[in-house]
Length: 164
Image (cartoon, rainbow, N blue to C red; front, top):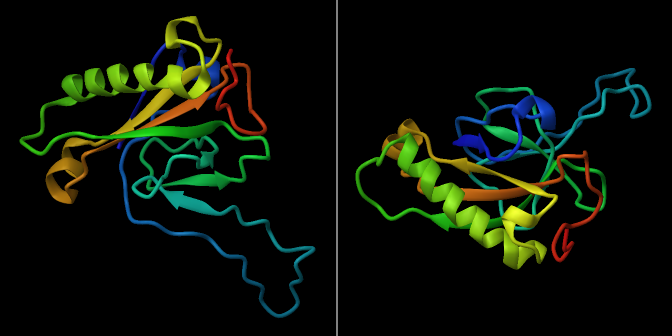
């Protein structure tokens, strides 16, 4: 999957391009003899970018190519919230530019019904995950995931109905 930034620069939002997809997985903490939960490294649960669902909250990652994103409880500070999804019809891979155009059009239009303010007037911004040519051809990936975020920083709680 590819991520595109719309109205903000990646560096300004502290974001990186999100690329490849894989299967779902979560991390678990494990301890060896002598370790205890108090001195063991904290393990952050992750979720496959293929398995993201509307309502999931995730954090950014420095990875350019990734398979998973750090999954966060939406009540806790997080970078993104998945607010909508769109399935591109089957067919030959239409190219990066066409997929970007579809994602931008769909996600920016869907933002108003989620946030309560039109994309162009909102203080919030969107990002999206799209199929790559490889995930389209070899994995049957057709899904666009729309993500909303606040360029000012992490958000606690949902942005649904935020009206800003």
